[in-house]
Every structure is written in structure tokens, then in C-alpha cells.
Length: 222
Image (tube, rainbow, N blue to C red; front, side, top):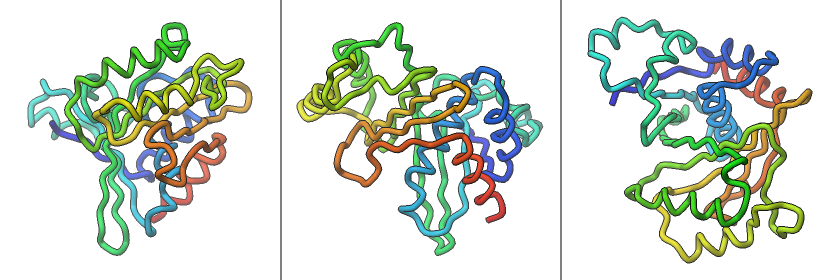
């Protein structure tokens, strides 16, 4: 599968537009924002680096068609493959010469269909068909306050029960991350490292749209 890669600088105009606009995020908007959220949460673990985002192109495109595509994310979005194990591939090229790859698979979660711990577990059970890989699963919730709670209580999805399920089950993804995109007057994104818990310093973090704009601007000149 062919991936089309963009630097943060090349995506900067597009990112600034979707963050400042009041329009509803589409599939590609959600995936780019979720991938950026993952990168911002982890970037302190790496030395100064250049970052690139790769997007899989549709399998039915010929080599000639691929070469003729404009290197403009807004113009190639309709050529991006919807059904891929890696929806976004982040490449981190450190100044020291080391290169790291973060393969991400995105799953949009509809709270109307998955609104309880049991339904979440049923959803995760279906994902066990995948082969083991280093892919990180990013679950995207939209338009909601984080529905997860370590204690349970008023929240419908209990982290305690989910942690227990993960300890007792073999899961194919290296990591599971929850990205809650709250679209209101002050848009926010909540990042939550769902699994493996307690193994990295990430945990739960909240980012505003200004945090993302600042990060992209600061890394556009590297």
C-alpha cells in the first residue's frame, strides 16, 4: 500500500483552518486531530525531530495516478483508503538520525451504540480478530465529555472493569488511546491512554485547540 506523507509545515494551513472554523469535523479532520493529539502527548519522549504524517491511498489507484496527485492534503483526501490497518502513520525523524514509526488505526465510536461498559467490551471483543502488531488503536469519541470514569458512578463506562478485562484478555494492539473531541464554543480534546495503563507517563491529558495550533506552528519551521 502506498502512503502519501506530509510534514507538519505542509499540513499547517489545513490544521489552522479546521481548528478555527465552526464547521463539523469530517472523518479526515477527526483522524488528523487525533493523530496530532497522540504526537503532542508523546513528543516530549523524543529528541528534537521532524514529524511526518502518512495517509494510505486507495488500492485501486495506478502508479501513474498516484504520481499525478497534487501534494495537497485537501485535494487528495478523497483518494485516502477508508479500510486500512493503519489509517495514519506518524514518522518521527530525530536530529540525531534515529527514526521512529507510530502506526495508528482510528475507530470512531458512536455513543448512541456504545454507551455502557458491556457494549464497550463487546466492541473490543470484535477487534481481537486482528493479528498482533505494533499498531496503536485510537478510539475517537465526538461531541461528548469523556464518558469514562475510574470509579464508575454517574459515568456509564467504568475504567476499573475495562482494566480488569484487559488484564484477562490477549489484545492485538500495542496500545489503546481514547481521544474525546468536544466541539463547543471552546473546543477541547481529551487524550486518555486506555491501555497499557500505568506503563508510560501519559495517562489523561487535555488539550485546547490553541495548544494544537501552537504545537503545529512551533514545529513547522524545524
